Length: 206
Image (tube, rainbow, N blue to C red; front, side, top):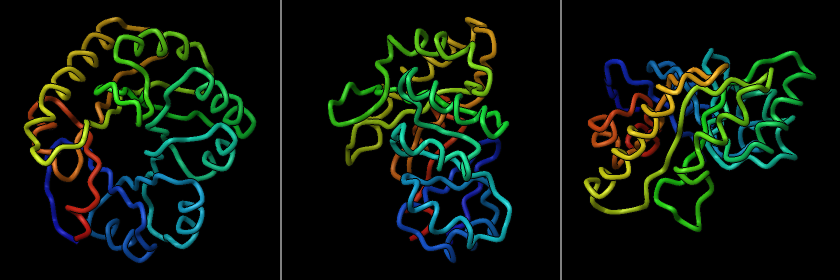
């Protein structure tokens, strides 16, 4: 486990494929947020982790897995439609839980990725805002793949402008707190461009 100190930046340990022992080690080293991409994988490791942490879902969530996801996760970082938010709201209401969500934005316009188009993000958030058991707390994005982290800078810059614009809109029941962008290869550039939450896997564990 590599120590990484990022003052004022929330670090999500991206734990896809990691054992529960590795997750426990990460929490013991100071990680406060565990990120998982798959509900079934989270179900396998979550009961074996005996240290406290917030668990965030960072992969694509299918509506038929929402009920299971809400037993583990306090935040869904990958909400990409009103329909998904509506199902999260419905299932959260059943168990009396308020769920934090981030809206996933397909900032690169990639057909292979999920997420709302940047120009649709505020519209989707406005749709979601009246839901009683869901709280929109920010945006999440994944930049297009590149070997050069600098290639991601324009996308991160665009996301920060989008985040600030939505924040200024003061949409009811929306608290824009987190801009989740930047991964192991790009987190330094992301932070320079305004990210306050990074999702790190390889750089932490290897």
